[in-house]
Length: 94
Image (tube, rainbow, N blue to C red):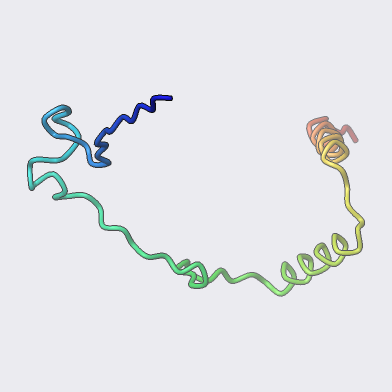
């Protein structure tokens, strides 16, 4: 039985002679590119938002309601919004 062995040299680096776009030959290639910023997910750079005590109270009530499982489906919410909009758009006569 005869075995055939093929040897090939594979380079993982692009060959600039084959593909002129493979490696930047101009040292100015990277100039002006944005520097990567490290982002700390635990640091907030946004300004604080002040809310009134009444708004805070309502938000806490709504979160408690959601935690208790008293929720409305998306479809039901859309229906309610349509009802509210249709009621508010009709003119009331005295």
